[in-house]
Length: 379
Length: 168
Image 1 (cartoon, rainbow over the protein chains, first blue to last red):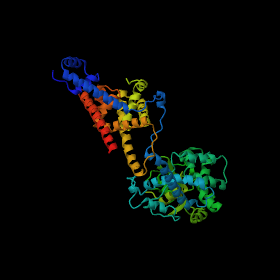
Image 2 (image 1 turned 60 degrees about the vertical axis):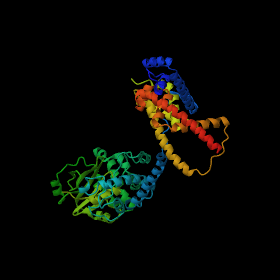
Image 3 (image 1 turned 90 degrees about the vertical axis):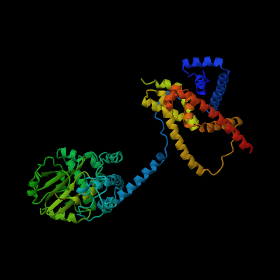
Image 4 (image 1 turned 180 degrees about the vertical axis):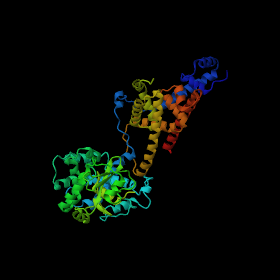
């Protein structure tokens, strides 16, 4: 047998040489002094290496109890983890800033409850950005994720506070959508204020004014349109709409008569019992094409009161349905409504051709105004 | 059938800490990582817990080393004053010095040799080391022989160099 290589000797010393090979090796070692000497050298080397490694061992401490391991350990701090709160703070500050900016047009005088207002608007501001893109021109909605060319966000935002109704349908409207999972903060606040629960008693306008700020897209979520419409035509849903209404009118100090007139129209928000009609029927009732938001599915109903009022219901997203009430202008209500039309704070109603159009839905007043701008005769 | 992790824990924890220590050179950190590896094993329930643990530990140590390298760059920039004077007992200083020398020597091995040596020292068999490193089982003896020789040589060279430096 030739002399043994060091690898075999180390395996032998490590006790890892297969037994057959081990026997062969031992037989050779018994005869070969040279290999025995090599074996002793390797043994010394091995021991030396082990000793060196032993010098570089940590002071051994007993292992913590195994059960302790299942307890979730504090996560390792990554550099990003440290910065996350800063990022949050920046986001919130930005959102508050935007919210404050955007609230000016419709709810300026509502400074009596600025706090709730801000909370509501923070969330609107988030959704608004998203939705502004989505609700761009219908032709461009195919690529929802990209901002429509020529309609940068800044433009939508810059346009928001404008009190002038801009008909331009090609412009992106900044629209707020209620957040399906309303953050608990706002909801809790709403509950604390007693706003969320269905009001058994009619509130006065001034009481509603404070409620309605929270109403701006958040607490309203609690009584989603499907719910309130399914409910029997009780005073509760009507109240809701009234409070929205008084946001712009009551708070702005517009005459009560105007407010009441509008409530009358919008109080019909419970429309599930209204008969569904075809577009042609709507057209004959209205004397012109019914109006709505282009590019969205719609359902047209008529008022059972046969007063010529038609409502176009359209789903903006899975959780949000808006109602666009319309009737021929020139009714008795026209005079007082016309005054309301002039007031800059009131944009929940507008005239479109021969129609008076009002909009309602579980959105902030601001958002509804933006949607109202988009309304046009439906094809 | 997965191993009994509690049993593996009792048998393997010290070895895993040792293994990790030779990679991160921080006892507390090595313990943290070892415990984290076991905690992950509890969740993952691997077939071969011991082998799995060492793979995971090696990966964690590598990530740790990268992170440490990044931090070191920052620290080098920040560090302007020399450390305060050490007042440790002489034995501790000797132990420290020896540890540093071993560390330096280990770092001169090829990654594969070092890995095999550390796994062996952590109590792994040739079979396990072969699985872990991808080496042929028959090559483990040769690899370990080479790793041990280089470790001792590098250590001796380092100590000598250190003494030269101290004298010069």
